[in-house]
Image (cartoon, rainbow, N blue to C red; front, side, top):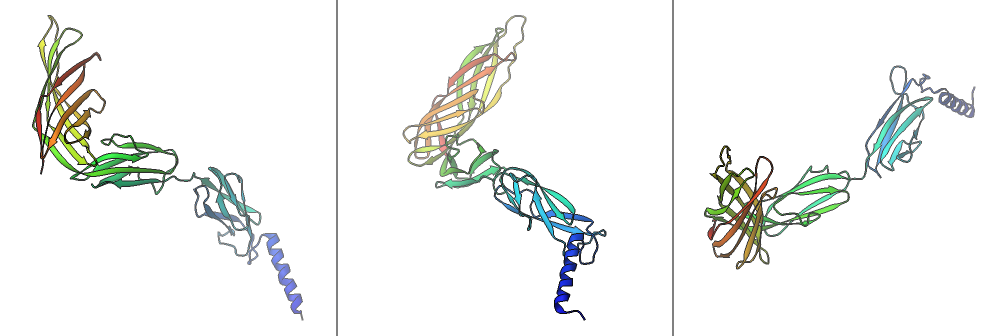
Length: 332
């Protein structure tokens, strides 16, 4: 007959023997280790769980076999030797090994930088959309380049960027490189839209490098989107039709010129009594500067238009003209 104390001693001795031989409760030896993680790409400061599972020769999990864990780069990520809990320390890659009774496997943990945030806010009496591209998921990796677009709804105009986009032309998107948490605001104001009658501007003639002479003129319709916030502001657009006509052709030469459209956009500033709109083409070759006043549902003023014409050889020829007075009427 075996006493209870003797029985306990035998059980303890059996457990110790199983641990020393790398065997599970069935007595079989560990053949391989399967290792998994809850997150292979944690960010600095995050934790992840690595789990090592001992398997027998049939690929069946072996119960009762202890496993331990180690990191080959504790500067990037550390691991609790007993639990397998990984802590991300710094950007880098650490291989986490799980060892069970002489067999081991490893898994790579790639530590990502802490994300930065982008906060977008809308101000003013108007409405509109404010969008970032890419949108973030939900944050951004440091160094990400983001394009922010403000789109006013009908009856509103986008009047000013704020925050990190302060100083950006309100008619243009704002491009940022995010290296820290960033805030951007866009101000939308209720607007009134005025559309002009067709304006016309005779411009000075030009003579190119081979002696061809051209008369130049421009025409178009300008749209003003006005808002009030302690003064007048807003945006204006026009598409100038630049007409070029050959008037003098040197002997034995051929002169060619084609008319073209020049879209321009810009901002409005001032007051009812004295307002200005400064428009330009995207690359600055052309400008359109309007000066005038608003009275009720009409605006009256004149503009100066300039354009730098370019020939096939890359030579530039400046041409400038004025529109004379024209009227823009509020659209209901």
